Length: 481
Image 1 (cartoon, rainbow, N blue to C red):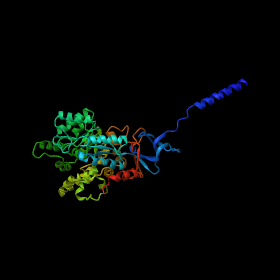
Image 2 (image 1 turned 120 degrees about the horizontal axis):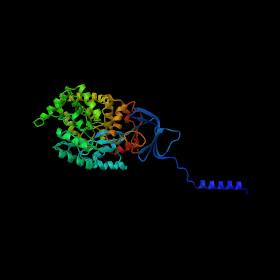
Image 3 (image 1 turned 90 degrees about the vertical axis):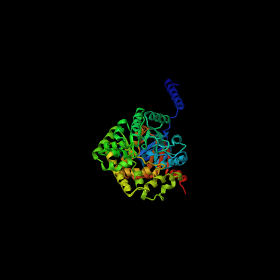
Image 4 (image 1 turned 45 degrees about the horizontal axis):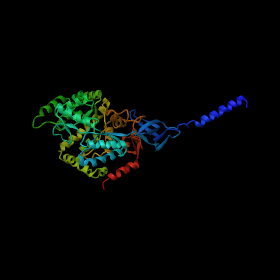
C-alpha cells in the first residue's frame, strides 16, 4: 500500500475512533417551567415588554427575553399568549394574631393570600410568632401553600399595652432587653405601637434599633413629632394619622399640649387631637415633612382601604359579603368589637371620620410626587372587621389609583417598594434573571386598569405553579356552609 494512502487511512481510523469515544454534545437547557409569548409588566419602567419567554429553574428566573421560534424544553409550560406577567404582589401590612386558640384560623389566611396573587406578606406584629416561623419554613419547603412571610414578631409598646404579647418598655434598659429578644427570634424588623408607650421610650427604641441595624416602623405617640422620629432613624410609618399631624401648621404646639396632658387624669391622644390637626392642616408643612421623609427614605403605608371600610362600617351590611364565607367563624367573632364601637359613634364623629379619609386620599399623590416610598398594605387579619385577606390588597390598589397614583405606581407599592424596604430587592420584587420566581399571570393588562389585578390565570410561588383551577380548589375547603 502506498505510504500516502496508508497515512490517510490511519488518520481516518484514528478520527473515527476519536469521534466514537467523544461524549455526546450537552442537551439543550431543560427548565422546570417556561412561560412563553407573554407580555411582561415592567413595573419600574411603567411599560410592557411584549412577546417574552420566562424560564424558571430551582425557584429562580434563569432566562428572560424575546420569544423565539423554538420553545425551550421544560417540565411545565404556561401559555402566555394574550396574558400579562407581574411580579407576585406584596401585602406590606397584615396581622396574624389572637393567641393559640386562633392559630389554626389564622393559618387559613395563607391560602386566601396566595389565591389572590399575593406571594409575600409583611406581618405587622402579633402574638403568633412561633407559628409564623413554622409556616414560613413549610412554605419555603413547599409543604404548605402560602406566601413568604416577613414578620416583626411581637410589637413594642408601653406598660399595660393594648395588644396581648407586646413587649412593654419604659426605660432604656427595658428597650435593650426587648430588642435583644427580638434579635434572638431573628425577626425581620421592629414594629412599635402607640397605645401606651411614652414619647421618650418610643424615640429610645428607634435610636437603639438603628444602632443595631434593625429597621423600625409602626404607629407613633402624639407626644413626639414625626421629624424627631425620622431624626432618630425611623424607617417607616404605618397609616397616615402620624404623618398627618406633621402636616399641621401648629404641630409643635399640639405636641406640647399632648405632652402636658400625659400625667393628668385625661391624657390627650391621637383621636382627641385629630380635629385640631385637621383644622390646622398646612400645605407648606406637608411639603416640608414629605421632603424630609423622601430624603431619609422613610416609607408610609397608607392603608386607605381599611380606612374606608371602617368609616362605612355603621352604615354597611356585610352579612352577605361573598368572601365572608371563607373567614373562619372564630375570626368572624373578633369583628364584633369594632362593629360595636363603630355603631356607638355619634353622627358628628362619623361625618368627621369620612372627611378625614378624603383628606388622607389627597395626601397620597403628594407623597408620590415628593418621592416618599409608598407601601401597599391592607391591615387584614383578626379584629379588623370585613377586611378580607387577599382581596383587600386589590381594594387597596384601587384606592391608591383613585387617590391619584398611576396603575404602575400602585403596582410598585405592592411589589418592588416592599422588597426595597425589607432590603431583599436583589432577589425578589421584580421580574429579572436571578430573582425569585414569584409571579402573577393575568388575563388583562393591569397598567390599563388596576382592577385587572383580580383577573388571575395562575400564580407562581418560588417556581411552583398554581392554576386558577388549583387556587379555587385550595379555597374550597375553607368555605363555610
